[in-house]
Image (cartoon, rainbow, N blue to C red; front, side, top):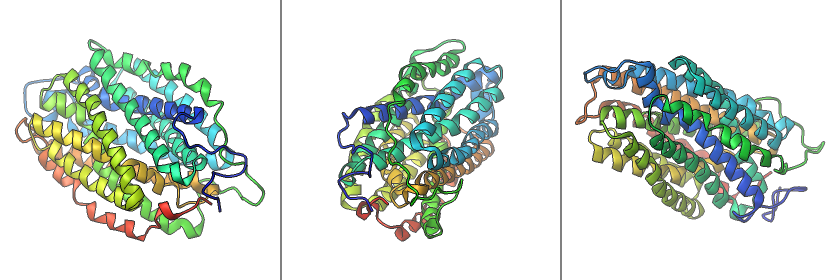
Length: 419
């Protein structure tokens, strides 16, 4: 067992957000968030560029591509993210920081390649390759943060990493709102080369959390210990439910706001940026909830509010969209750090990255299911400014919420020491 004073032999203990290691990890999280969110930010532009907009009330009429095509494309991106599991699992065998560095480099390069997309499905293919790479890098940022931090400071530093990913996403939305014109999405994707030049060189200075010893046998690729299987399944179920609720809720944001509600692109982009304040408040509230009531309560509350806010956001009208989106971002801030803690704290070092990879896979599977269902129902039920996408939202976001009951069977991470 580790003491509360530090993460283990041969590794520094991180306590301050000003620590150079934390700054680099934050920059990695920001870079991955920026590159990943570009596929969502530019989706309306991509659909209009490669589709055909006509007068009508269906999703295809107003944005150029059908809800099923958009849903299939987004589902493909999330399905490809399943490859984040073997990539993250490699970190249990080859070290956290080498795998983190390589996946970040490759993910940024492929994102930049999407700027050359000649067709919609080339865009999908590029992000399908980039997603698992960037997802593995994000997962390993969380793992490294947990393993290098003391228990007293862990949630605060995880909140910082969550904020990094969120700021990267918001920056992508802000740039999307500023860069307008023909092929503007290409410039957005090409900007992935900036963190490749400015951030990646510093990742070589990240320390390895713990030096492996002969007493710590390496986990087989994708394998966790038998005694951890129950906890892994429970956390994976929670991740699946969160994926169903948050995948289409965020994935259709720009298509719905710009295409259905006819909001100006800069207005939607500004909404995403301003909602960062709500996200920050959510992080503070989530950290307090996690410290007082525990990780499980913070995750449950955050997920329930996220689902309810998403339903309201898509229920019709610009005011509902703005309020629902802002509240949903705040709720995401509440649940994200505690969910990251649940995905790492309850598992031993020798298979911690693998377990985090499986949990990421479960979240991806949930998002894929959510995208497919949301896209299908949106094609069947016409969308309008008054009715929005209320029916798809109700059908997609609410039915699985009772499954959060599995949280009761998990150990409380705030009372655990890392092993």
